[in-house]
Image 1 (tube, rainbow, N blue to C red):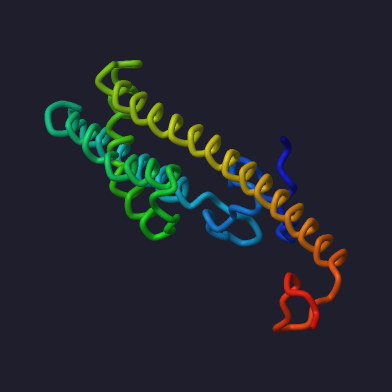
Image 2 (cartoon, helix red, strand yellow; image 1 turned 180 degrees about the horizontal axis):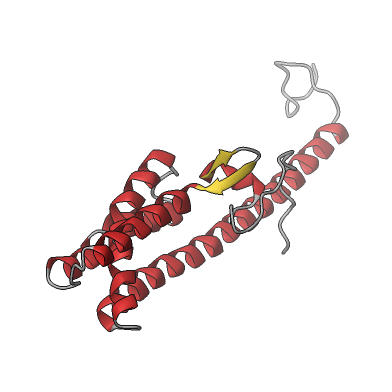
Amino acid sequence: MPSAPGPRVSVRQSPLWMAHHWPEHYDRCTSLGRFHVCRRCLVLYPLTFATVLGLVVFDVPVTGARVAAMWVLPLPMVAEWVAEHAGLAAYSARRQALLVAIAAPALGIALTAHLRDPFTPIAGAPVVLYAAICALSAVIGTIRSHEDLEWEQHHDRDEHARREALASLLADSPATPPGSDRTSPPG
């Protein structure tokens, strides 16, 4: 069943490369001039590229603790993503920015490893695993929200029908004075 269209938002839509959110989700963006920019991307990419630059310029190897960091640093962000899409946590811009800032160096380390050894499993495994977890939770969350919307629409329709039936019954019944008993004979 198609869902009812949402409210119109009188905000200019930003290009997809700047804000891959619909206007009704621009609360997940930061305004830069007259455009909206995805807050997650605004934190993620500069910190990721700063990490890559630092590792490449100083020729830091991607081994040991840095490999562990690729697995550990994204965990809070992934947990928050899953919780939000499961309806267990409300969206928070500050929490999102903080957790992305913690996770961004892990992506920088993975990108550096990939630049040095393309498609190395050391870099690819955590990225693929966490991306799959986030994608799956987003799909499940979307399906659940559509089911909730359909249930709500069905409930509203049934409630409207019940109210119509009650109004019809009340309109067809003769008026009874308060305190009188219809079953007792007059007298």
